[in-house]
Length: 113
Length: 110
Figure 1 (cartoon, rainbow over the protein chains, first blue to last red):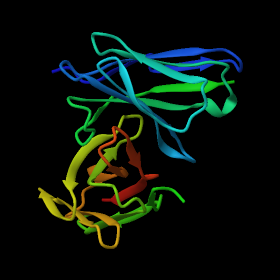
Figure 2: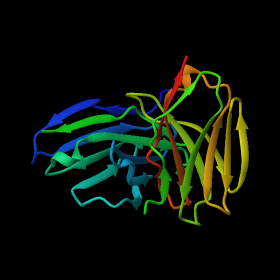
Figure 3: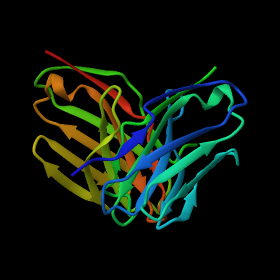
């Protein structure tokens, strides 16, 4: 069974640009959550999607957005990038969205210069 | 105050030692408590989860939750160099949002 796939693995962007990250969950999993991981703040919850609906959102500015498609694949978008957005972005999938058994991808390392 | 607090370490122990990793939390609504292990350049992987108070054992790992003191622990027996990683505690209320601790970096020396 294939795991959670995140693309791309590494990304370098310039301040002010926008970026789109992709996450393909484990087959059959309908819940996808996104997290930002930085050395100073740890893992911070961005949002959770289930069957194309956002069910919860973390405390991030509106520049961070996401969506989920009918095949459960998810994308997150960050507009007007800031230096502080440099981080590892992780997505996790679970079957029912209970998040007690979430499986993480390897993440996308975003560097904003 | 963060909802889940965890000492970032690092924690360094000799091979074979018993390791104790701890977290505290502030939200009484948390019902599920998880421990994840994250190796360098990898995503976190779930080690185990517990519901409410009590202990749960899986091989060399034991997770313990004390809801009265809002304390979460992970014990690793007979620690191995391969256990060297960052350990993240997490808590979940059931509202489709998991809160993670900062993670504790563990080094097990051969």
